Length: 555
Image (cartoon, rainbow, N blue to C red):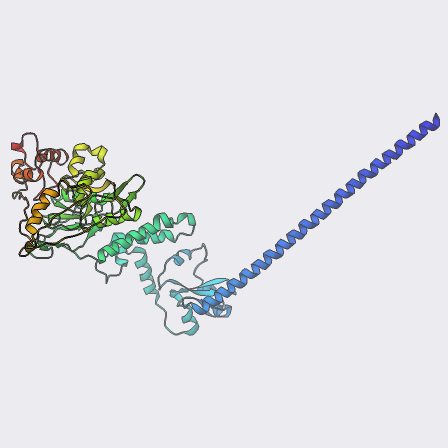
């Protein structure tokens, strides 16, 4: 029994020893693995460090190459050695020190690009610094070569005072006589914002800088391509009106029948305004009302009778030709078109989007959209789709009070009137939403000419019976020309306002009933509702009708 017990104790001791040995072995293995991992990490760190050093060395070499190339190729930059720098500054003497640099007192000078103050000349790569020309002590070239005398301190002080206290207008080139000071100041302020040190303080390039630059370019091109129209004794605009003066255009307008507007006998506008958005129209209306000036609205196209740009009374032309954007929605067969676009521009915009959509308006590409759609508008698709005005489904309109209205807010009576009797009668139509119509990809257009000797008379007689009854997909128009006078047979209805600009409903009915027939009374009632003071008026506008027509006078 004793031997058995001793044997078991020996076995237990052996097992315990083996267990301890296994633990030590595992501990040793873990320590070895940890050491190997640490070695690998150290090797990786060393490799990263070497790579970073190599990269930094390459970048430094590339930078030196760029500096060398720039010094050789760019006349605006020069590379100076440390010896030249020390020579020019008398070994960087304290007597030549003008500031701390960087964020010190001299920082503001580096923001002023004035040839008599601070100008960047080059760099000293050896010393890691930039070389500026500070004219109070002479330029670096002057110090090295002693070629020219420096500018006296008296002149320097005067220059500093001019920069610090002079008005912006005085800083502009005085040889240019017609600076737009507000626009130039706006451009200068934008440039200063772009020069901010911190990126977050600079304006966004796409949202602010480029649109502003495009606007300034458009303004410049607009004023380059037009010429001024001012008359003696011109009425001065409001002292503090909304900013309309900077959108004044200078334009030449040719008239097909009444002659050139530059002719001495043709009435001239006090000013021509070419708005770029709705706010400019509102400003023009404000100024015109304040100073008793009439408004003539042009839609960018031609005007045979000249009603949109002549008046016997002092007047302002509101030329919408800059408002000519067109947006086509093929999926919904609609489009928004601004009044300043021409029919040709509208047709082209639609054709770029679809070959099977069109708009039923006039024949001539130079006709303005505003006048065409607000006056009804007939064309080749008249028999199938009606007038252009019949296919207007919404509009953006500015009334006499400067409010911007759409179809819903203006009401159906005014919307109805704008599609056939608009033309400046009720306010300013800025844009139309139109319904596009379906057409085949290919259409046939032909023209047949006949003279009296070729039985033209019988052809006209036959046309009167055939044209109204043929299929609506076919439109036959007839034009009769008198070889002796192209004006033969032309009729138009006009009325002239009296010297005080007041015309009664009865007087206007002489032409109005003939032109608008039974719709004239309703149009006059709409006029009274939207323009009771008769601000929008001309020789062919509709007077307001207030209840009893016998007392309806324009105010």
